[in-house]
Image (cartoon, rainbow, N blue to C red; front, side, top):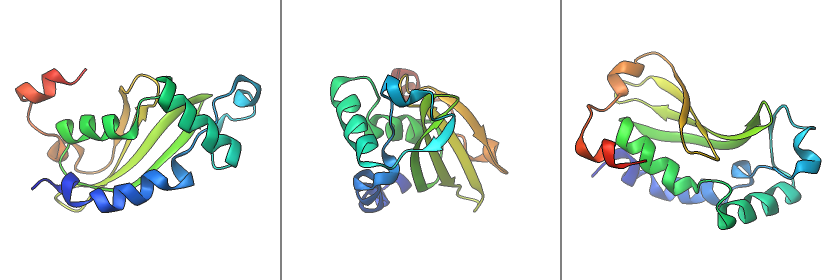
Length: 133
């Protein structure tokens, strides 16, 4: 069983958490340079944005993460960086290092990965890794 599967109960709690919600309506976009989105309007927008396909669902981001990295997800936040929604994920590596991963919430691409032991936490390339867009 993978580390990600073992932590699904925690992730389900996180998915329902307001910490995963971001505001992307154009009227509010300029007011958020680098901010965590947690208001009721943010929650409504994020839910609608995922349903309409404007944001990648967290489940898709976690599949990408699992294909690329080893470790256990500790914290997930949907925030705004430079006006763009991103998933910030803290991962505890198998060696006990905290790694921060930042995924673009619109495209799903990994934007940033940093932390001690990052290279050791990366999975070796496999056919599955190449199948995930």
